[in-house]
Image (cartoon, rainbow, N blue to C red):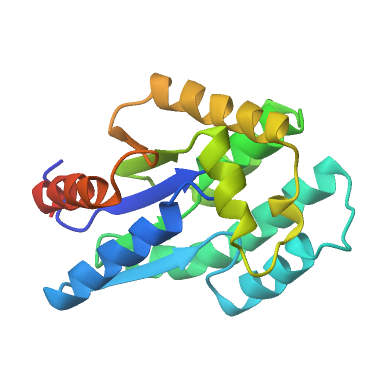
Length: 203
C-alpha cells in the first residue's frame, strides 16, 4: 500500500452511508490541500450524468441486460476521466465494479461472464487500491429511505432485494484483500475516524 495516489472506492446499498463518507473524505483532503478527484457511478462525467438520468428515472423499465449495458456505458465515459488522473491524483469513487456485480449479477441474475468480460476490456490497466464497503441493517435502511426527499428507481426495491444485494457485496468482500467493512448501524463519528485513519496510512 505504498502508493501515494490510490484509487479508493466506497460501496454499499442505498442508505448505507457511502456517499456521506466519500464526501467527508473529500472535505478532509481539501482541508489538507491534497489533490484528488471525486466521482460517482453512474455519473461523474458529463455524458455519464446523462446516462444516469436515464437509468434512474422512475419511469424507466429496461430489461436487466440493457440496465447492465447502460451502467457500463456510463463507466466507459468515466474511464476517460479516471485514466487521465490515474496515479497522478487520489481518486475517490462512489460505487464502481463491485456495485455492478452486486446489483446486476447477485440481484438481477445477469450473466457473470458477460459483466467480467466487458469490465475487463473497459478497465484495461486501471485498478482499485482500496474499498470501503458500507453495510446497513433493514430497520435503518427503511428509516433512512423515509427521509429521502426524492426516490429514484433504485430506491424503490423490496427489503428482500436489498438484503440479497448486501449479501452479494459481502461475498465479494470475503474474496478480496484491501477491503474494509464499515457498519453504518454503529456510531457515525467512530466510522469517520476509522475511515480517515485508514486513508492517512494509504497516502
